[in-house]
Image (tube, rainbow, N blue to C red; front, top):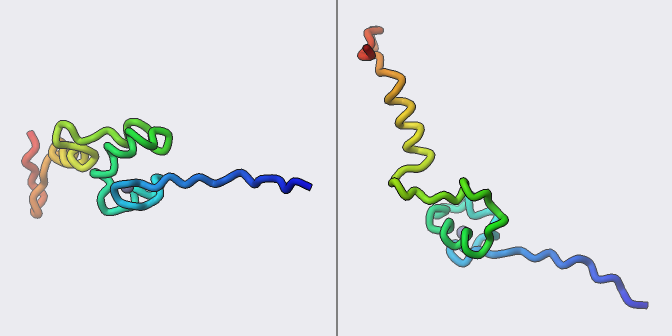
Length: 82
Ligand SMILES: [Zn+2]
Protein backbone atom coordinates (compact mmCIF):
# COMPACT_ATOMS: atom_id res chain seq x y z
CA UNK A 1 0.00 0.00 0.00
CA UNK A 2 1.29 3.39 -0.89
CA UNK A 3 1.47 5.55 2.12
CA UNK A 4 -0.18 8.83 1.64
CA UNK A 5 2.27 11.59 1.43
CA UNK A 6 1.55 14.10 4.08
CA UNK A 7 1.55 17.52 2.58
CA UNK A 8 5.06 18.73 3.01
CA UNK A 9 5.26 21.77 5.14
CA UNK A 10 7.49 24.08 3.26
CA UNK A 11 8.95 26.65 5.50
CA UNK A 12 10.54 29.49 3.71
CA UNK A 13 13.57 30.68 5.56
CA UNK A 14 14.69 34.21 5.21
CA UNK A 15 18.14 34.52 3.74
CA UNK A 16 18.75 37.72 5.64
CA UNK A 17 18.00 36.81 9.23
CA UNK A 18 17.61 33.05 8.97
CA UNK A 19 14.18 32.99 10.55
CA UNK A 20 11.15 31.53 8.84
CA UNK A 21 9.72 34.28 6.68
CA UNK A 22 6.65 34.61 8.87
CA UNK A 23 8.86 35.40 11.82
CA UNK A 24 11.00 38.03 10.21
CA UNK A 25 8.92 40.80 11.69
CA UNK A 26 9.85 39.51 15.13
CA UNK A 27 13.49 39.48 14.23
CA UNK A 28 15.77 42.30 15.06
CA UNK A 29 16.42 43.26 11.50
CA UNK A 30 13.06 43.31 9.79
CA UNK A 31 14.00 46.40 7.85
CA UNK A 32 16.77 44.52 6.13
CA UNK A 33 14.54 41.52 5.55
CA UNK A 34 11.93 43.50 3.70
CA UNK A 35 13.62 43.62 0.30
CA UNK A 36 14.28 39.91 0.46
CA UNK A 37 10.74 39.18 1.55
CA UNK A 38 9.31 41.24 -1.27
CA UNK A 39 11.40 39.37 -3.77
CA UNK A 40 11.17 35.84 -2.40
CA UNK A 41 8.16 35.62 -0.12
CA UNK A 42 5.63 38.04 -1.54
CA UNK A 43 2.70 36.17 -0.03
CA UNK A 44 3.85 36.22 3.55
CA UNK A 45 3.33 39.88 4.32
CA UNK A 46 0.93 42.37 2.79
CA UNK A 47 2.58 44.87 0.52
CA UNK A 48 2.06 47.81 2.85
CA UNK A 49 3.75 45.84 5.59
CA UNK A 50 6.83 45.62 3.47
CA UNK A 51 6.69 49.14 2.19
CA UNK A 52 10.16 50.32 2.83
CA UNK A 53 10.82 53.56 4.51
CA UNK A 54 11.63 55.30 1.25
CA UNK A 55 10.84 58.70 2.69
CA UNK A 56 13.03 57.93 5.65
CA UNK A 57 9.88 57.37 7.61
CA UNK A 58 7.69 54.48 8.52
CA UNK A 59 5.29 53.79 11.31
CA UNK A 60 7.46 55.50 13.86
CA UNK A 61 7.52 58.75 11.95
CA UNK A 62 3.78 58.71 11.61
CA UNK A 63 3.46 58.48 15.36
CA UNK A 64 5.86 61.36 15.78
CA UNK A 65 3.88 63.43 13.32
CA UNK A 66 0.74 62.73 15.23
CA UNK A 67 2.36 63.71 18.50
CA UNK A 68 3.52 66.97 17.01
CA UNK A 69 0.04 67.69 15.73
CA UNK A 70 -1.49 67.30 19.15
CA UNK A 71 0.24 70.28 20.65
CA UNK A 72 2.49 70.18 23.63
CA UNK A 73 1.27 71.06 27.07
CA UNK A 74 3.56 72.17 29.81
CA UNK A 75 3.52 70.66 33.23
CA UNK A 76 1.56 73.59 34.67
CA UNK A 77 -1.22 73.07 32.21
CA UNK A 78 -0.42 75.80 29.73
CA UNK A 79 -0.54 74.78 26.13
CA UNK A 80 1.62 75.83 23.25
CA UNK A 81 -1.04 75.01 20.74
CA UNK A 82 -2.75 77.95 19.13
ZN1 LIG B 1 14.26 37.86 7.78
